[in-house]
Structures are given as C-alpha cells and as structure tokens.
Length: 230
Ligand SMILES: Nc1ncnc2c1ncn2[C@@H]1O[C@H](COP(=O)(O)OP(=O)(O)O)[C@@H](O)[C@H]1O
Ligand SMILES: [Mg+2]
Image (cartoon, rainbow, N blue to C red):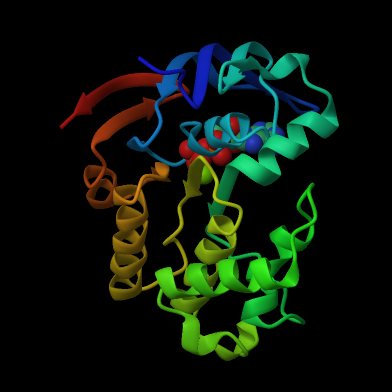
C-alpha cells in the first residue's frame, strides 16, 4: 500500500482550562489513504472538530503522533507545517470564511497569489476559472460574497480550497448553515470531487451525510467506537 496522506497514532488531546481538564481525544489510530472518502461522525462534543484540526495541522495533539505523507509533523517547523497546510490541505468549514471586500474570483485566486512559488496571472486565471466551473459558480465570478446565497458562498469556499490542488479536503460540518436542498448540492459536489481523485474527510453529526462516505468512522467521547467500509 502507498504512504497514507494522513496517519495518526495513539492520538490524545487534553484541553486544560482554569477549572477543568477535557479529554477531547483518547487513543485514536487512523490512516487516510490517497483518494479515500471517509466520514467521521458522532454527537456534538465527541471530538470530531478537534481530530480534524489536528489532522489538518491547525492544532497539535497532547499525546501520540501525526504523520503527513509519511513525515512526522512534530519534527516540522511552524513554517514547514504552514506550507503543507496551504498547499496540500483544503479546508471547508461551516463558516464560509470568504472575504467580503473581494469578488468571488479574487477569493478563489487568493491562495494562488500567496503560493510559495509565484504563479503567473494567466495560470491563476485558468485555475480559478476551472475551479469555479467545477462548483457551478462561473457566472458569479464578479459578485461579492454578500451578493450570493449561503449555498453559493459554500461552493465558492470549495472552489477556493480546490485552487491549490490539495491532496485532501477536510470538511467540518460544511452544511451546518444551509437548508437541506443546498446541503444536498454541496455534498454532491464534494462526492464528485472525490470521484475525480481528491481524498475527502467529512466531519458531520448528520448520519445521512456520514452514510454517503465509503468508509465511516464513529466517535464517542473522544474514542473511535467503530468503523464500517463499503
Ligand atoms: N479550545 C478548547 N478549549 C477547551 N475545550 C475544548 C476546546 N475545543 C474543544 N473543547 C472540548 O473538547 C471536546 C470536543 O470538542 P469538539 O472537537 O469541538 O467536538 P465536536 O466537533 O465533535 O462537537 C468538547 O468537550 C469541547 O468542549
Ligand atoms: Mg465540531
């Protein structure tokens, strides 16, 4: 088997606040292979977002190891970790996190303008046009995020995540702010992207959406309760 994109071993995360310790994750072992479609589900507070943040190198575990494409993340500098985050991982959150002062086009172009290796405007345009096309937002390129619907904003956020051609999309409750029709559309787009080869890890408390994945992980109280595979 090839090197997994992400592998976590005996992962633990404790949050300490003034008056208490929260064991958010305990003894998590998980590998995500290239091209996989995985869901992580479980009730609110079971540790889904914490796990996704650690797998996305946005946060660090208090115990255990994280490997990204075989590299032990604890050995990386802040800058090296940021480079992986910016070039290999696409994040999609419940909040779309678009910049209201920029057009849809410029929002999607942003990660390309900050790429480590400079990219020509012509290449950027090709890439942005492709990504907007993939999510059905080409006709909205010149609008501001405030001038399109929530569902359309999430499509733009997906296009922005795709712009850098990430190895994996990490998705945290992407449909939390959307009605069911728009949510279904977002999940269909994500599924299509997976069919085109991008690994997909979807965190959700929605059982229906969790079931769409080819491999399903169930979390409870910070531990893996079980998993099923199609
Ligand atoms: N920054 C934090 N500080 C303290 N506790 C936290 C923090 N983030 C999460 N937690 C706690 O860790 C547990 C898991 O949270 P989370 O990963 O957000 O769960 P989920 O995404 O499944 O709802 C919860 O008990 C939550 O209150
Ligand atoms: Mg969460």
